[in-house]
Length: 497
Image (cartoon, rainbow, N blue to C red):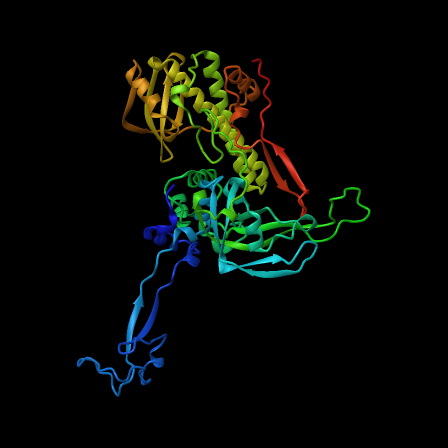
């Protein structure tokens, strides 16, 4: 992973950002200033009045002959300090991006302003300030939510770090906190008139203005959100939060560890983050690691990825048949329908259901992509592929000649082994010229049921539920932690295998 702490944001992006209504990186850029400096003593003032006819502190120094300094007085020399580019590691979206890329690793968290406001102890609302510039933690569960509208994560801390942050007595029964949550969200564009430019600006301009790297799943995920009609605004600075009890248990409670009220308290903001190997972390800041989750065997899809990881060498071929090809057509149409529903729900303010449809859409497209790769591996001789341009993006179009059916795939979703297999067999690869095409997104009224199509694929080892990046989506319905609604994203599949 590239260390962003030693890299400035591209100046071209700053110029693009300045064209928007509000400069999203304004807090991280030094504005152009004019200062006045005495050529003799080096004294700096904001205005010429403060220097002219003021006694020079180094009156004994002789000036150059060509410098008229009067009666050993300060002289004003104008210095224009150039505008500085913002540092990537200080921009909230880049903090979130770095955290997502650093999952299950140690980090050093820099605290904005060098101060935290933490509870004095459990069962009290008294807050006091703790002066500290940074702390070490182990990062877990860093992810974006609501189609990129918010970001969350969890920092596991040691007993020594808890003492440093003075949260070693604010847990249940005065116990030490063992974790701190991270939370960040984007302001609603519809409610913030000063951010209206983000609704109409091109996606490349917006994402560049946010200070994001050119490559990476975080940026790609936001690009996908914009393409679905979800405007993206700058992420607010990530907050550090703790969940702690503010009053003693009720004597009448039949649950001995139930407290009458918990609150989530924001104790500070993150100013920067530095990923670290465990060897660079002090021994008293290390924590007992949770068992590392083994990466699944391909094909699989990662939580922030737009396309599945294929694994061509171990991919099982899928013999072409009418039922398989017809099923892929059905799945593709329903994926487009899920995309339309996600956009509709988002625009109506139903963010949770929008996320449900977005997760299902990604799973259906993943199943389609894996099936196409398996069909190609089984019979590359009867496939013709050529490049198409659709709405400015490049796609491979695979023609299954025997079945007189074709399917599009984004170029970045197709492994080169699939194209090479077609080229090395008796298939045809036509990629010299890119044809511009328009696709219809209409879903026929007489389309067969999605569940039936998915059951057919599941019988051939392709269960769409295996490619859901989330199996449940939760939505807060009240101020208390237990006040929430939960929605399932799973498909109703009854496989015979």
